[in-house]
Length: 280
Length: 315
Ligand SMILES: [Fe+2]
Ligand SMILES: [Fe+2]
Ligand SMILES: [Fe+2]
Image (tube, rainbow over all chains, first blue to last red; front, side, top):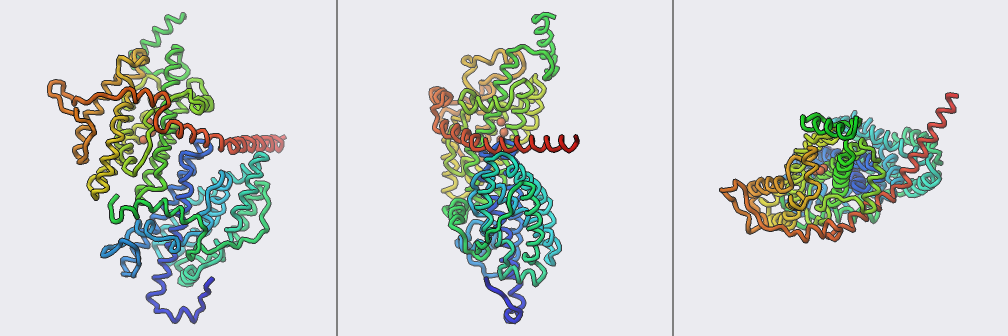
């Protein structure tokens, strides 16, 4: 992880640093929401029961909607500041939300590793959503106070959705943890699968540190306590043990992903890359 | 009151456009016909999610991704209302799903065709949702109350879907030559199966007579099919595309479009299970249902535990 000291910050031109940090910071929020929305949408039509098929699709829609808000804002910042932003097929025109989602490759994506992991069974999808929503709720709570009014507005709008995602996923963690022998076992397995990716949520990247220092972004290290409290409470009610294994997998925020993201992008970006510069 | 009098009373209500409600007396055959029709319709909504769901992860823009996802989710909602409407007639959702999964219940054959390109999402919206609307708008006045009310809500959403599909095709048609070709190819594949969605010709449609008398149905298959062809033949001009039928021609005398012969062999083959995707669709439904079994069991077990705990606490 790159630590940025105060002296390093002073060396960078004042104008440039905040804009770059803002772009990376916003892309990180956008990518994370998009990839989790995309993963959840893989359930549409295949859910365990009709009502829950609708619920998970709804969460997917919310997340994709949030991603669009962040991408649109990023594009606006890039265009307004005439930031040199290299994208294939894009020359001589303003950058759009779709360019950012469909024309960046794996190494440029900044989403959390947690959200790109395969859906697994319903229990894994639920646990991943719970871990994430508990984090996103706390994040948006702080982001509402951002000095960047756009980010604050998106957070304020989105936290209503996240509140529901958190309640829904908490209830399911409890239901499955304290359901049948089989469901309990599957949740233990889900914990095994995903706990290792939770450390990254609270490990700030350089651009998050800058964004936090500028008071446009959230200092994610401060969210960990409240997150652990929530997770501990829900797992306890679900009769599931709080994992004690280390949660060291990280890198997504700076583009070092797991192998899964490449396949997601290959599928997601196929039309935009096979038929570049087309209107859909 | 004897059955005969009850039947007369029932028919009088129907004739006077008074809705039949779940607790009202109804002929057994009326109930059975409705259960069959409503559950088939519900199954169609659910199976219909599969060919379109295929493209959610590949949709070409964020806006298209969100609208397609919302559309497929709407179809799940339609399935839900319709299963509920059928349940008012004394059959459970489990029973209906079992009929679907074992292949004893039918669903709309159109969903046994594959979605091969993004344009197919446009063609399905325009033609398949379009044909569905044609079939379903009259059902909003169906004699059975719960069915009619479910259809009102569903039809509103279906017309939204149809407009979106039309708009997808229009963008493609006006787009690059490759996109235009994609759109035309899609119409070539989806047109005839859509025309077949109205079911067999009137003289080969065994259930139609009673359904008309009971005002479950208000127009015959062929009447609705003609209406559909007439509308599409006009709209396709705006799209700048062609319907794949050389015999499609305005007939001044009839005041309708004439159209070519339907391949009924293909129709019956797909109905009998030999369409290109019958097996995949049924397999996918079965897989989702089977893999969801432990989740449904856990939800029931948890609810049971909770109930016992509150009972204990209250004691
Ligand atoms: Fe529908
Ligand atoms: Fe329908
Ligand atoms: Fe529809």
